[in-house]
Amino acid sequence: MARILLADDDPASLDLIGRTLMADGHEVLRCADGTEAFQQLSAAPDKFDLLLTDIEMPGMDGLQLAGRAATLAPDLKILLMSGFSESSDQAGNLGFSIAGFISKPLSLEQVRNAVRSALA
Image 1 (cartoon, rainbow, N blue to C red):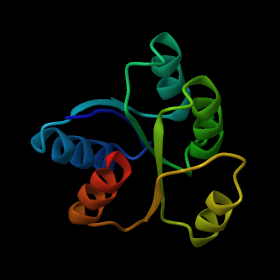
Image 2 (cartoon, rainbow, N blue to C red):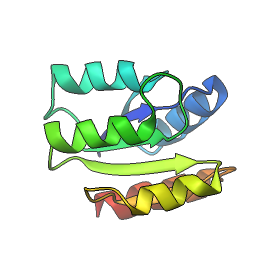
Image 3 (cartoon, rainbow, N blue to C red):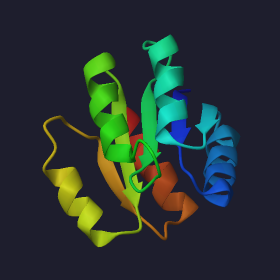
Image 4 (tube, one colour):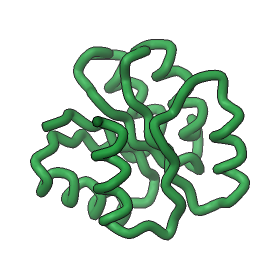
């Protein structure tokens, strides 16, 4: 299974999504913000197969994290999620490729399907 770096500033989402992906057999490292996630990625750029990040986070947001991640680890698959409709527009105008976008509120089945699709 995959090694997933998960970043979300909402503790409930972080816990629920993390536990769901771990139950599916993935190794998941949960980070409470973009800065922490980027530190983890910087320490081992080849360690992760997928970055799943919320866009709206304080400090380093998910778009900044995704951009830095795409530069640091070009083979890393990136999935973005957000509860704000304008975020999906921003995600479509990035200077790098993303594997998908998940709108919040999300279902766990949406997350599972998006992760499966991104890793395929």
